[in-house]
Length: 100
View (cartoon, rainbow, N blue to C red):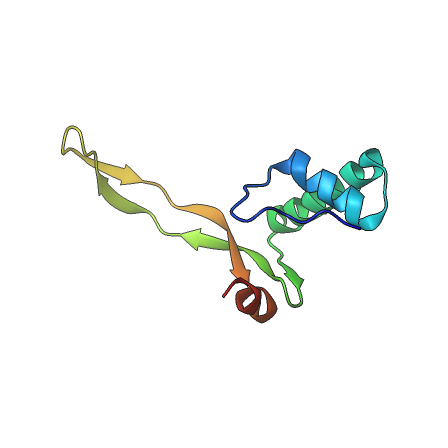
């Protein structure tokens, strides 16, 4: 029987690997390789401007942020914040309903 995630738990990569190994019946080494391969593939797709859509879970994509002017809260001096790209995650319907 697979062990359950504790209520309110924060899972790091190590704990995620342990749960994947337990639930998939894999060794921790194989589970770690699978988790890292998943993360690396998502990262590679986003770096190349693509997106990763996992039906029922959500979509990983890249969003562009325009340059803007901000204010340093300590000195009240105006600063220019350059344009940049940032990763974005949009949860899918199934995930949203599961979390309700």
